[in-house]
Length: 180
Image 1 (cartoon, helix red, strand yellow):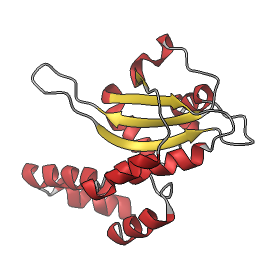
Image 2 (tube, one colour):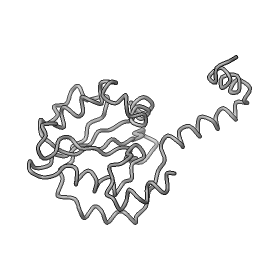
Image 3 (tube, one colour):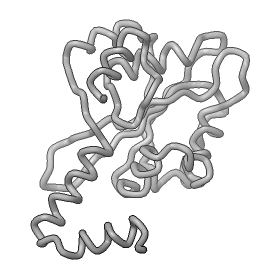
């Protein structure tokens, strides 16, 4: 008896080139679902002033990250001469919080080592497939301030496809209903 993987490979081998393209497009569509709505833009009013820094993922070796708590976002940017400025926020996270010692520097290093994101399948796909187009944005958050609150406000604005549960309770219930 063949394994399900063998059966799947046999099935895929019989697909036409057009059907294989549809299969790949469906894979990405299901891997990175977008919910983009102006309805949640008002959540940006819950953010403190943030001074954003930007580093291309593949240029991180030349950058000194702060040893300070903060928030960060990964976005995909197709930066080519024939395209206008563009960016898709894919993931929002926090580095440290009240009572913890995690920093933006340590948190970014987690995303350079595959073991740092191996338990996060969507982030793993993001890094594996978009590494050359990935941009890391970060902003420091004052000590004593909750990075978790800033993270959830950012997640509530962008509804990034790689975030699972980092939303406020209000937005989380909507997202859960839509992503079922």
